Image 1 (cartoon, each protein chain N blue to C red):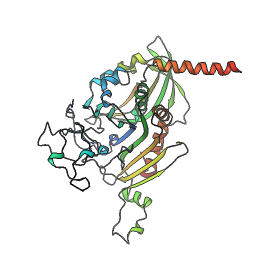
Image 2: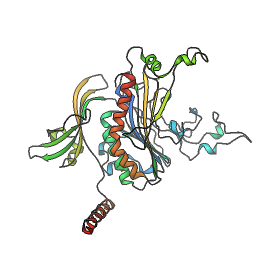
Image 3: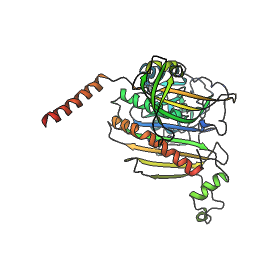
Image 4: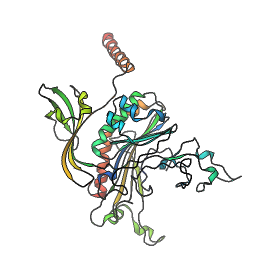
Length: 198
Length: 227
């Protein structure tokens, strides 16, 4: 696998493909073994003090020693960055929709047009939601035109208890920057010029 | 600064068999990045994640060459040449796309030129398990002259798709190391563009992410019989 690959998946992580994050820092834990002597970035190892594989000392006239790292070549701080970890509480989705807010009522509700993401061939529907279903952190995002994701499924907690649940999460995109607005103005001007020219 | 990750709460060790957490959806960009930007507080400041998600982020690793953390649903890892964001639940796949588009809308001058839309997961297999898969993918009789008891350990197929113009598609299937008799399936939709192409890559991400998810689902269903 090329070190410049965007193919993130490596199944053969020690122990688990989605295993615990670890910090391997020889300056903090002198007795820590060198778990993987090959500084393969694709395996999640990076050197915190700037060393790179290219700096690994070579024997005179030899190729680099790919599978041997002596104490002298061990970087001062070697970090194994975390890989995705399972959540303690697992949510198994049954169905998911993408919704767009089309009206916010005074009755603590909002009306949305929803599109089925699980079965895209299903027609769009209009659904009324209670604002009580929206997480507090997302309440300020509820506005006409706002996009959100609505998922129903089974929530299984760390003790094995299963509950049917519904989750709403509003889309978060950065506010328009001055450059964005300038770009739109320019595009509008270009179109205007185009029509004027006719 | 290097912050040791907190000990994971609750159960540790291998993931329970059949857990949906055995699947990962991810977006990878290659280019030149400044890892020190990518901190939970920065994402929360720009409202790309919730404030409480930023405050409760775990597995924090910050150094000049790397930033990594897990903020509730999101796992982010950035080095100087690689940006990778992953989720382990399909319901977070759309927010993942939004987050990446949001980040690189803010950082629109980031020199990134390659992008991978990735899926990988371990899957239980129906009757006959892995043997049925390998029989369908490899002609073992062709190998008996060279080795006895041949078995398929990994297969990678590369190609293109009409609905993903310009992409190089790659599918990799191996026997699962997590699930006995199960299969590990990964898909990769790879895009390349010019050195200043992050806007082009984000446009591709916005238009292709749902298709990439559907494609991964099709592949999994084809070779495992279910998802």
